[in-house]
Image (cartoon, rainbow over all chains, first blue to last red; front, top):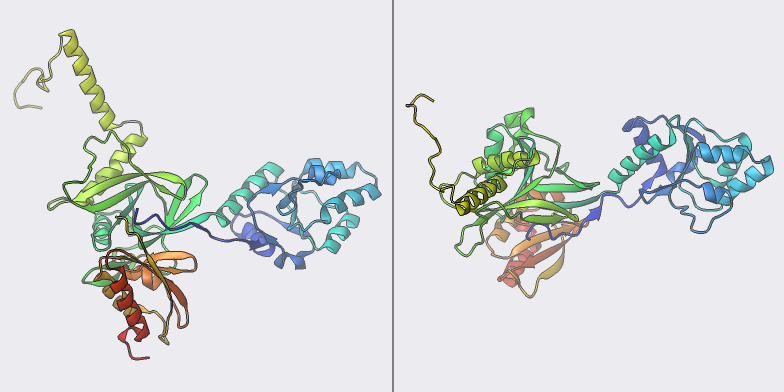
Length: 343
Length: 95
């Protein structure tokens, strides 16, 4: 596969706590109040997307304690601490602050009493409090971290949104990927990226976008660089689109194994996800743009539960079994009775 | 298409103004004359060296270190020609 052999790399290996808190406030709109050690937040780093609730560690069991993760202290942990005498509360918190914890979040509007804040201040572990309920907060935080640490790869091709279906056009240099993309844009579809497509894995979905640099520029051989957004306007571009179908353009040769029925589904592996792939040999007189539209519509049809290849297959099977019973014939006219040319 | 070997070579950009549009065009044009696949590695990413937008996206500055990867039946000739171009600062007067 000429376009998918590049090793994926994570967008980021680590993010600082101060950066994370700023983004959570600005982008995820989470209200976070700093309770302790804010000045340390620039030098504390989060390196993984997983979260941890340190209930057992507070109780003293610190074997296998995943201290390198973000620690979320919810109602259970807070009440556990509250029900202890003061000295034991301090001891319990010290059980976890002896480790290099990146950050502690207190959910449901909980806070630490001053004598506990003193301990985390001393340990230099930033503590933030949020009014969000624990599971809701963990979901939002997890989603944000998944995005920050997502795997990313760069592929060579053109990404277009055709009727809402994200199609990645790939193929050898000079085969005409950009021209097909331009033709699609001209017919009202939306360009995501040309030539350099960034793919990001978000849960089980691949999101495609351009790079900041090449955003909505395109190279047309013989003409040079054009700017699709200035030329065709805002409706002709998109910043991001889920990748749903890969369309590979190949030069025609007779040995090529071309799918004739559509019953077999080819796919390509990108960042460990299987993406449906259609291999399209180019022949003179073939309108690739229209075929791209048909691919999108066919994908939509299948998505809504109608697979034309399967439907046809069923029809053949039904006719064969009827013929076996001696009741059917394959060359029945599509209409039973001609009333005249008045349909 | 399986070729037994693939050549990789570390390269430093010598142009004072880096790999901007014209040098990129010269590089892409030259690479396009060969059958071999040509890729450029930078920042852990790999871009197609025959795609001008890909090469320009790197925005490689003077002194930037790239790795060229050439793979195909004429890989040796291709790499030599490309290296010569880089050494000649892409045939451009230093701006």
